[in-house]
Every structure is written in C-alpha cells, then in structure tokens.
Length: 351
Image 1 (cartoon, one colour):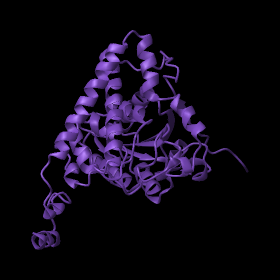
Image 2 (cartoon, helix red, strand yellow):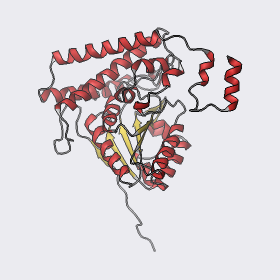
Image 3 (tube, rainbow, N blue to C red):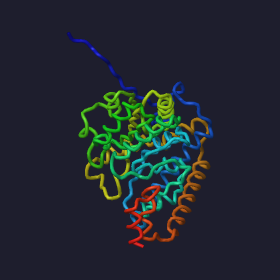
Image 4 (cartoon, rainbow, N blue to C red):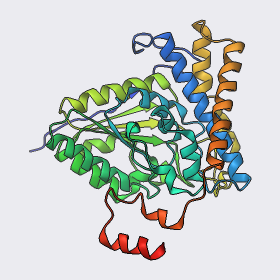
C-alpha cells in the first residue's frame, strides 16, 4: 500500500513592493505616526551603521558587522515585539537594539571592545550580542520553555542568518522548541551569504522556511525588505506562540549590501551587478516611495530625519569616546548575575 500521509506548503508574504506599491488588503493597521516611526528608525539604523564603518576604518572601534540592506526586517519585527518579550540577537541586530531603546553609545562601546557596552539596561529585555553562530538559539528556546513552566504569557524572539541554519545548534533548538511548544519566534535573516558561501551551497531546500516542517511547526517566507510584511508576520507569529500553538520560523528574504564584516571583502565572491540589483530593492527607498504617494513625505521631512539621526549618533559617539577606561578586573563583572567562587578568586588575583 502507498498513500500520502501529509502534504505541506510554504506561504510567501509581500505587502510593499520595490516600487512603493502596497497591497491594501494585506496592509496591517498602522497610523501615519507609526509609518513615520518605521522610517525614522530605519534611517537611524543606517546612520549608526555608516558611522560605525567610518569609526572602524579610523581605528576607533574593532571589527564590525554592517546591517545595511536589512533594516526592514529588523525594524518591522522589532516594533511588533512587546516590551515584556525577550530577544536573543546574533551580531548584526543593531537596528533591533535601537528600537528597544538600547543607548547607542553602549553599542559603540561594545564594538569598541569594551564589554561594559553589553551590560544591557533592564528595560531593554535583550540578551548580549552572540558572536558564536547559532548558539544563542538554544538559549532562546530555554527561555521559552521557562516561560511555559512559569505560566508567563511572554514570548521569545531570536534572530540569526542563513549561515546559522547550517549549524547543529539550529536543528537542536528547532527540535526542542517543537517538542515542548516553546513560545519562540525564529527570525532567519536570509541575506544570501554565510560570509562567502551562498545559500544554494548550504542547503538543497527550496526555502529555509520549510525546515520548520521537519520539527512540527509553521514556517513562512517573507519579503525581508518589506517593513510591513516584517511587522505583520512577526505580530501574527507572536500571537500564535502566545496562544500555546508552538513556535514559528520566519525566513526574511533579504540581502546584505555591505561586507560580512569589516574584515571581509565581498567583491571576491559576488558580482557588482548582483549588488546593484538588490540596491534597487532598498527597504528605506521603497518605504519612502510609499510615504510619498500617501502625502507623508517631502524633502523637508527627509532632511530633518537625517539631521536628527546624525545628531543623535554623533552625540552617542562623543559619549562612548569619553567613557573612563575599564579596569582589567572589571572583565569579570558581567559574566554571571553572581560570580562563581573560582571567578571571584581570579578577579581578586587580577586586582
């Protein structure tokens, strides 16, 4: 006997295309003020990003991972997350940090090699940057399982890149999340490259979203350069996980315009023509086109937003560069809530 046990499908969501045309049927309810908040946060993220690249080239911070081109998925999703929810980022989520009210000077401090920059303020509800690819997803699932155990109606969101889906940690996290119905939203920023390795050389799957199926939960692919789709998909996913229906995987199909990090040279593994094509899909540009059609955008507004962002980032740089130097023994202060006896001994010895 042969029979079909189950059939699966993967949904694709796009609301705002690269020409600024919007599907009003799918459009989430957003006030004009919210639209402006999206745009302003995206511009702030890009200005922060540009400044960080300049600081790195000047030797004022260390190796940096740029976010240019991925502002829509970060800002759209971040605005859908509630304050009580907890976020586990990778190393490219500066836009998410900024929306969550993380002081920009602390982000510069971290990228400048000072771990005090990751002494996250309590109201931010984000964990520190995770450099180890994929490892933080396991922590996210653990937090979700804890919320279930404590019967807290809180959700967890974790961000990662396409390269992380090739790590064992990703599959372990997905498996545990599915089995225990952990309230976790996995957001994969598929920016097409794991450093120099394109997605087609990482997996034979048609989409990364379909990997959720093997672990018993929902996966969806969205246009990651569409801030409206990013917001709606994340909001729906959070409602799903809070209702106890299990986790959700969102594959945000986007593109990293810059190098993987400042220690990388993307020209060695991808063509300029490819980058130019993706620049036409720029997330900030398409939102600008839409807002112009809606009568919410003009040159005066654009200039004022840019000026404000540059002023805020410049102030953050000044604060960062005027922080008193860290004492060597302070490297132990932000490892655990309570230091182990062994670390206490090491700290005393170093002092």
